[in-house]
Image (cartoon, rainbow, N blue to C red):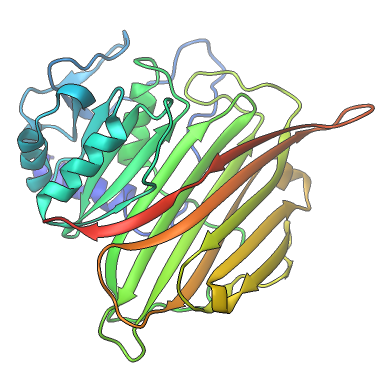
Length: 343
């Protein structure tokens, strides 16, 4: 398969719609050998980027011959990164300042793009930009270690997409004339589990009425190995809470308060203030191990202009039952997600 065909295939199966049938990757194997995350992937490494000692890495100097190209965040050339994106090759920045470099590169391309947040922490050392249908989608990784977790992140970038949700959001449809603003992702792990959060925004800028639709898909996992790291035993998935502030009038939101076969759902909204909170808790043994939720909200807009933003915090909670009291662990993914057009 030639490089262009490989990238087209990967873009189709790995970074497409906010729907799919894959689960979170990174679960451990029965052997002591580390997972071969780079198998089948062709990688281009700029000077200053290191990979751990892994076998069988297929490296190419020319980004045109690779599935993905990695740059050091502090020394990256925006021109080199933009050239790789222009030919359809995903770009990854590695090291301190990776999210900032990703944001600057997106803005310099002139394309539509989305960002998962306008702030970041010290553990966010990998940030990716993935070309898709004339726009740029972004992925950011939290709580990872360099260089050991880089192969896992590469595989996630090229193959990861949200699994099917345990919750239906079909109560709100997207207009066929809607403009795809972009898709963003935050992926990471904690000492007790793993989490994955995707957002997608579409807008009808000249519709009657003008409006936007925002989707969130979130997965929580417990009791598994992630990226070669052991997860502390005894914790189970306890709750996922999606807290959203849109800054505009909330026309409608799903899901409503109720139950599915595996989850209990509570929903509280303040339409005039443009805010809504969805909370999801497991009802079955399988859901205590892992579950995926989704929300969809339609926002009324007096007019549309870039940047379009959403303030949202998806909170992932784990619980470890105890004799006298339970132990809990919470991972926040807060911030102002925004979608913009480069200059």
